[in-house]
Image (cartoon, one colour):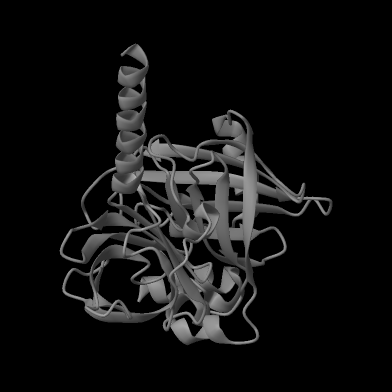
Length: 312
């Protein structure tokens, strides 16, 4: 009799586990897969966590953070390289899957201008579940602050997240400053921008190296605790305004991954600020160094005049 009860209990346990696994399985979610990215020319990878949390990454330029609904819809936020410098580099999205599962359609709304809504449509390439790193699945809580070391030993990055004034056109009430050292060349860069999600899990801004190389960047604290960074090296203003520039053979960008090595101090994060001859303020104002110059002199001080359009 005892054996019979044990068998029944074991069978119920197995069935219960099977039901639970099926109910919480993320890879079976209809949004999971790899899609085209008609805007930037690469691919969009989408993963699901906890049943309805959507994460996506496209063309080493941007990421998605949102939620799915039972009616085949999804909504949330998108973040791209260069918030505060590139127009429409952050905002919201509302998407709906096609009835036949062939792709999705919808719109994005630019964070810089709520009246600027753009259509977005992509097609499914593969319905297999992408790797979490390919989807930029975020850590549930926390921030990207810290002293980071590239997994391949090529760079060290010190990042600090600070509170800022909300409203007044600011993209976020958090901003970050950071100093990056490339190894073994010891080339140094200063980067600054906006921080989004929780206490600053996503960082979007702009960097300038001591030799004048500069470009937009996007970083995010991944599910595995590592920091991912999309970056674009350019002295060409087209990368700030022309999406098609990202689809050319001249595109110079990549994806770095960092391990957390400890905490960063304010002094470490601002160490490379000395290389910036007047840099944009992440809250949308000119820095004190820049305001001391005329607009024409300031633009001339930076290679290619990348910031001139901000003063127009």
